[in-house]
Image 1 (cartoon, rainbow, N blue to C red):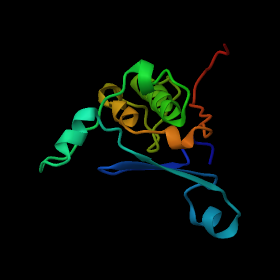
Image 2: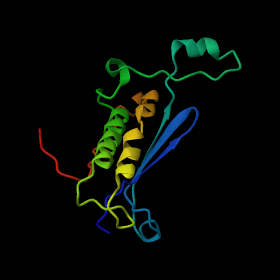
Image 3: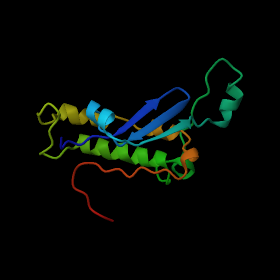
Length: 148
């Protein structure tokens, strides 16, 4: 053990996002021999006002990209928490500390770091998280941190 890993499952469907946060490690012994907790939330796609008009057509409604003022990453909700968490992981992967090692034991290459830089997480903000108005994710990522 001693390696960083999330204990979360995210299932992205066409019309909803399912988020499951668990207390167990993803190993048989934890699930079979220990008491665990699971938090689950299901969040629908946020639709634009045009989507209502499009619903009668054969094309699927499109999700809107919320602005930072209306439902974006600066707000305080579980979706914004997820978005900021993945941004922090992306920053770590794009510029890993020299001591960082992949699960294979090798140091990440420039190509590995570039792959992280190409990842986009804006899709998280296309879902409506208002149903979980009291749920929050308190996440940490490996590395050095400074308090506010």
